[in-house]
Structures are given as C-alpha cells and as structure tokens.
Image (cartoon, helix red, strand yellow):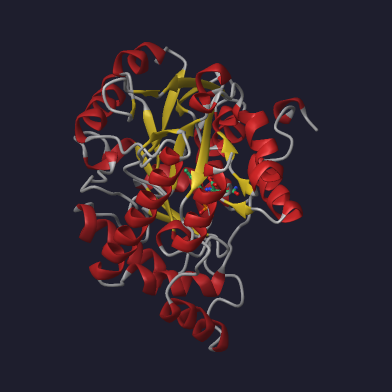
Amino acid sequence: LNRRLVGFGTTIFAEMSALAATTGSINLGQGFPDTDGPEEIREAAVRALREGRGNQYPPGPGVPELRTAITDHQQRRYGLAYDPDTEVLVTAGATEAIAAALLALVEPGDEVIALEPYYDSYAACVAMAGGTRVPVTLRPDPAGGRFVLDLDELRAAVTDRTRLILLNTPHNPTGTVLTREELAAVAALAVERDLLVVTDEVYEHLVFDGAEHVPIATFPGMRERTVTISSGGKTFSFTGWKVGWLTAPPALTAAVRTAKQYLTYVASGPFQYAVAEALRLPDAYFDTLRADLEGKRDVLAAGLAAAGFEVYRPRGTYFVTADVAPLGEKDGVAFCRALPERCGVVAIPNAVFYDHADAGRTQVRFAFCKKEAVLREAAERLARL
Ligand code: PMP
Ligand code: GLN
C-alpha cells in the first residue's frame, strides 16, 4: 500500500455491516434503505435491459436521456440552468464524482477544506490526489442541539494554498442542513479568495421540518466555480445501482471527465435510463419520500432519547447523531464494537469521520432509512442497555 493510503484500511461501513451479519444484529450502521425504490423505476431498468439500452458501453458523459433529466431537474427544483452536453457528467455513484473531482482539480500540496465530521471517502480521495485536508469542525450548538458551522473558523482555515472547499449539505453524519445565511457566507468567502467549491448534495431531497436545501451554485459568483454532486442512490433508494452525477461549468466538467474516463470510463448503462425516468417523477414522489423519512426520524430520535442518549435532531439525511456520554460511555468506537453483543444493534462511531477525534469521541450515528417496525425494535433493544 502506498504512503498516501496508509491508515485508510477497511471502511467503517464494511466493518460494521460485516459485524451486523455475523451477529444477526439490526444494522443501523451503513446507510442504505431496507426497502427498494419505486416499482415503476425497477421496471424501467428491466425494460432498458430487455430492449438492449445500455447493455454495451454507454457514452462517456452519460446517456443523453439522463443528462437531460439531470439538467431539467436542476432547472425545475432550483432554477439552475445547465447544458446537458457540456455541463453534466454521469458517474459511478457520487463516490466516483467525488474521487474524479478531487483527482482532477487538486494539485499535490493543495489544501482542501472540508467540514468535519466528514464522509469517509473525502479524506481518502484528498490523500489520493496528493492534497492536504484541512478540517473545519461542525460543533453542537449549545442553544439548540444542531451542529453549526463556525464561519470565523472557516475563514481562518483559508490559506494561500487552499484550492477548494469540499462542502456537504445536507450533512452526513450530523444531519445538519446549512442555512441560506451560512451558505451565503461560504459563497462570499469562495468568491473573495477565488476558491473552487465541490459540493456533495446527495441528500438534497431528504430535508425535514420545512428545512430548505439550497444548492450553493445558486449564490452570486458561484455557478462558475462550483461542482455540484448528487446521486440516484439516495433520492430513489437504489444504492446498488451506483448512478451518480455532477453539474459544473464546461471547463470544470471537462477537467473532471478527464479523470473519470480513466477510473471507470462508464458504468451502470441500463440503470442510467431508469434514473432518467426517476428524475421525472412528479413532486408527489419526493414529498412522500421526505414525509416517510421524517416520520422514521421521529421514531428513532424518540427511541434514542428514551434510551438515554443525547440526540441531535437531524433536519436532513437519513442519519441521526447521538451522544453516548449520558449513558456513562466514554468512547464511541468501543461502544459501537460492543453494541451488537450487548443488544443486537449496529451503529457507526462518528470518531472515524474526524481528524480531531476528540471532538467526536462519544458521538455515534444511527441510520433511520429502515422500516418503522425495525426502528421500534432497535429502540426497544437500546432501551435495555
Ligand atoms: N456522499 C455522501 C455524503 C454519502 O453519504 C454517500 C453515501 N453514503 C455518498 C456520497 C456516496 O454516494 P453513492 O452511493 O452514490 O456513491
Ligand atoms: N453513504 C453510506 C453511509 O454513509 C455508505 C456508503 C458506503 O458504504 N461506502 O453510510
């Protein structure tokens, strides 16, 4: 293993899903739904397979039907206009979009600012690109149980070596949805310091309590410096299909495509057609998905609170971060390793998403994209701890 990857080992998701399997535990660790996405979209994939659409290499940037569906979606939801021919790239999940963007845009020695705790592929991809990650820590707001971005800390993190800000909203694992004001401040900083922004918005449709997801590309001066990433895995509950995408101005799209074509070249042919149909589902689909998850969020958050955890109520994603300190626990990693044996539930320790591990030492993450009965059973088990 080369020096850049030393320490990355096996992802926490693989480790914890394996533990769930061997112990027969309820897996609230790795984030994937236990119910597949819409039947009609599965049928669309079957139709594409049967009709021979996408069974051979699709076009490098993605099939035209999907690229147009992506630009129509950005226009319909956010009023953002992109050219499907020059400003869209379909990728093997958001994971590849993140990797290709960082490999294409980061020079060795460049600094990449990311909001900590962060999704684990960010650190690995910054390392593979030869960059240096600069974490800016989201901290629980003493006033309200929400993780907040300290804008002064963000400003102070920018140096002459900063190349880009790697943003993520709605944010995994904290469930924070950055507000319009926070995003405006990030945008102003990016413009002032001439930074690129790569923004991971895979949970764009999973927002609760009336919270609004605002793409940072909509702010003044941002469209031309922003790579916006999303994924069909989250929005349509097909994480195994690995259909992701990005939208960005032509020069950035071309740069990322250069890296992407030597990673996978292309992926997921027939599924691209199905996701194209999914993006054209009526608003009711997205509203129902959100309402369903909001109810599940409430069930799990209430269960965790009743079991004695301190709960940070998420306004987005399908994760809830909880603190185990009130249970007398001092270490989230040890807690999560023992939890399957103790009560048959699997969770993810947030400490692995931090550079400053102390900041997240006692935080753990539970996924609630599961059937309500499963969440209730998990809550009962946790209450017996
Ligand atoms: N970004 C974030 C924040 C995620 O949570 C995930 C999925 N866990 C991804 C990217 C990866 O998405 P995909 O499955 O489409 O590769
Ligand atoms: N995105 C999912 C999560 O955060 C899992 C992704 C993965 O397994 N790599 O749980």
